[in-house]
Image (cartoon, rainbow, N blue to C red; front, side):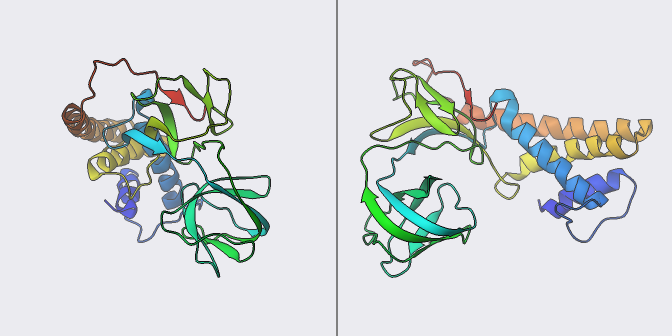
Amino acid sequence: MLKLDAVNICIRALGDPDVTALDTGGTSDAGEAEKEIDRQLKIVLRGKGYGTAANVREEIELTLPDTTLTTNTPVGTLLYDETITQAGSGATGKVRYEIGGKVYVDTDSGSAAWNNSGALTGGTSTATRNVSATASITSAFHAVPETAFYFIRPARREWKRLGVYNGYLFDEDQDTQTFTGSVYIDAITVRTWTETPEWIQEYVARKAARAFQRYKRRGVTDDQLLAQDEAMAQLDFERMDNLLKRTNVLDNSIKLSEWVPVMP
């Protein structure tokens, strides 16, 4: 489902004609409808701390950065896990985090070596940095940003207690945020509208339409009709979610830890 189609489900709930374009961030009915859709999408994907079959991932390997790139003249914001490329050397790697003027990178396998000059460019963000120094590292933080994760917990192979502090993983057993290798986690992950399956999109659109109509009009009859549409969409959503969860059921022979919120 296109996001514009979801917006128009909300617009029709007001009895108004369809709009022809999104007004992302705007104050028109279309802009406000899109904000409500985004809000409801987050609510559904968080799933009261259980997520959905579409955004619960198991055994995610958080790889440790192997290189720090000291940079200057920053333009834009580098994104977690995006690929950066260095001009001149052609070196590439995944951004793990940026702090104190240093970009912490997990260098791609087979990549050329980073050098002490040459601009960095983010493949998704197009943010840029100039490199002034490089260094290899053997210990670092593991970033778990709220832009990527709603909740995390140790994967079953990890015999340790993990928490989250200031956007970074925390080893509660060792009382440290510094790690020397990969860590495996399960996670309830953030999804954009286009990354979300249609069986979730339909439910989110109906929830948003009812909430939007209440906010705008508060019509009793309209609310009852929209409640019926939402209830039918919820049944379809729960049926599909339960089906997919059963086909991906976890081995319960090992007790899993409770989910840890990335953002309170």
